Image 1 (cartoon, helix red, strand yellow):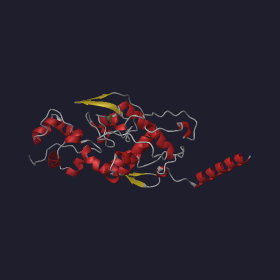
Image 2: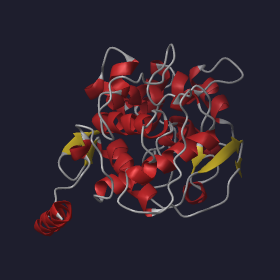
Image 3: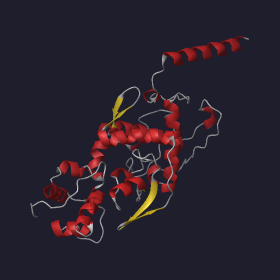
Image 4: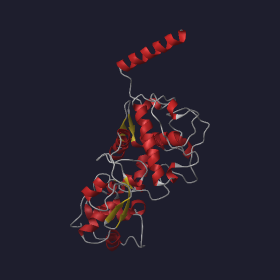
Length: 316
């Protein structure tokens, strides 16, 4: 392994995946990313590998020597390097305990969470890649952020566009969906997740939580919203009369779902989360208050007035 730096080595961009970064470096030399790594470090020695999940530590150290980027920062550009950070504060013995750690919509310990043997939170068992065409246009074909590999975001927090299903093939990106602006509810949810991913913490209305705690909370809300049976209809949960369409998958597991269903689940959870945070949904879970901003003096006055009005009707 040669210690001399590469003369051309663009720096990683915020949230960029390691494969995306190596693709941009290899493009400077007119070659493919796997060819560059094989000629420099002797890896990979197979026709195809997923560098985001399989890249060895010694190759990461070699990339650090060739580019000057700290090895610890490079490792965080891989999925393996992210798991410790994303799950450290919520490490629990069983999937059931992770999926039921936060009760937000209701308190119910009788229903079993949905998981399978070998299940791990947020790790899809198939290739899932949502991407932002604005980010790709700004940074070049083949660019993608590591978080796009995971079913965590429905939109791009930078551009406000819905993430689209994408297929990266060499120098070309094929888009399966069309561009569309995200709703305020989706942007609210994704802004919190993106803050956790980039800064390591999330500022909720009542307190700051770690990214691991936020993702556990969000995963529990996903479970409650779309995978647990509710005895009452969604119209009974909300302080509004509009039609509610929440997908229900009583026999499925989120990490096992097709991309089109993942999109539906994230959109539904964003809708529910926004109404929780705007005091527009009646929840009974013991952890719901973490997501609800403290009521103002005016809100408390209105609530008291509604209580007095309801009491007067009962007396009549």
